[in-house]
Image 1 (cartoon, rainbow, N blue to C red):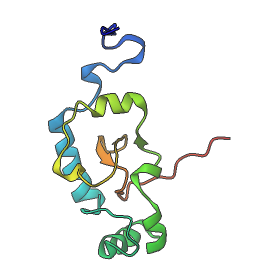
Image 2: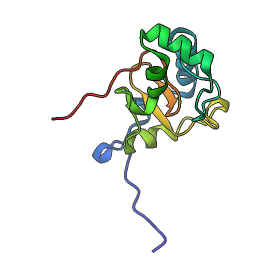
Image 3: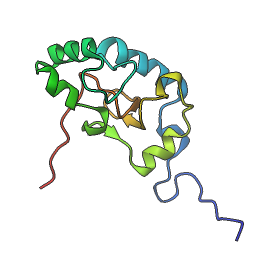
Amino acid sequence: MDKFMMMPKGFMGLPMDDEFITNAENKKNYAIAVQDWNYGPEMPTNAPGANKEFYVGLAEAMQCDEKDARRKHCSNCGYYDNSLMAQVRIERIPMAAYDKGAGFRGHCEKLNFICNDMRVCQAWEDEEEED
């Protein structure tokens, strides 16, 4: 079987083109996240103690200690969406240089841009616990 039935966009929850950010909007919102929301670090890594200056600054901005700031990532933020539908939409936005080496991409629902699971910003919110 070499042919698959293609579902029309918008059918059964498939995203419509106009329901998501454009590449230009993504670039603009990324720049705002970096400048105004302390999004980073620029070169994320899991190495203990790396990016000390970034995490000290983030901890100060978030009024927590550095150890707690290092536990926060886009991937455990309540605004991070990496659902199947989000991934379909994200694939329409070309990979940028800042995506390389930063983990998986997701959509930040608060700042409306493509973020990376190994980064964080001061808009970080704890995921709501389900009962």
